[in-house]
Image 1: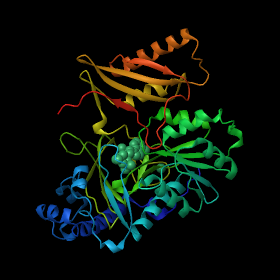
Image 2: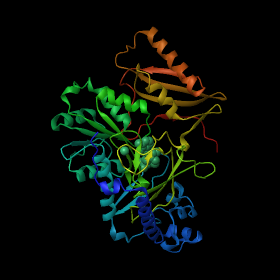
Image 3: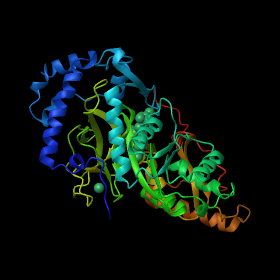
Image 4: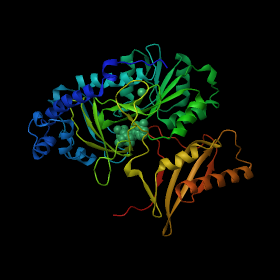
Length: 437
Ligand code: ADP
Ligand code: ZN
């Protein structure tokens, strides 16, 4: 494979140099944090009064974790470290799990973010000759502008399409010869299921690659998108607290996402004991940003579950790779006492070729018990008026799920392309059980 690097010196920097650079940037970031009202007292309580009190990267562990509720408590300016007139932009998280949190950027912060994004995009094999259709939400959500700026930095022609409206997306792809798109994996599946209806033929499109992120998806879903659309799909990870996309991204090897370690310090902890897990094990990702002056955030508990690959990547980048994120530690469902992650269900159903591109997991109370229903579309070649094969398929889905999650779900089948699709992140779980208070 012909690998290409946006910043080869940094991307392939020997680990010892990279770690020295991390320490240097951590001290700088601690300096920014000491100027915020939130961290000043926190750092002082941890015995850190100036950046030189940090001697090694491990000293970071003296600082308590920062949580989403800390960010809300600090709203609106508790985490701001520069004068307000130096701020050029703000973004907010999409608020999947509650009130959104706000992040501020200086002009240099935006430049740095664009550079990290350019590393990701160029590292996937794109060049200035590509036409990039960004099919994700613009606005406060970081996915739109994040990839947009990176695409411009690489020199691609960027089409700020935004999310939704499949007919217009197809038109743009055909009119301008789009070669690369960015979307949620669920929107990519949706677009594919609408192609026939829209009278669009794959051979008339120039698509080669897609960046897919913002929500968890399985390896089976990636393979499904790749084979249906005949493209390469690259996993893209980020969160607004850490700028947004551009934190970790797959290279041409498509086997784990390189996290830019000169911009982020990643720890993986056991979410119960808060101790680091053994190298390579899965746990909760904790991130410290090293590339933003306006809003420093130290040891942020992302709730995202992942681990590191331990072997070096064949591409030669020295920045470590994260495994696919299987979900958040707080999206585990407890169904009649059994722990189930939505990702386990997705893995089973997306691996079955008769199953279509969209699904929903419903959990409700039925009397004293919890009831799990899996609603899923069938593939385009399956007819809804032929009951026998449908019942056989239902039974097979039920049995396969039971073998994997130890719960026997009710299975509902729906016609291809008939289930609702959300414009932003897919809503995969509907839990209507009354919450304990
Ligand atoms: P919110 O936390 O409100 O959803 P964000 O828009 O910042 O706000 O979303 C970031 C979150 O999206 C991450 O913490 C993670 O849970 C999820 N996410 C982003 N990219 C991926 C990905 N490639 N795989 C799995 N989950 C992802
Ligand atoms: Zn690589």
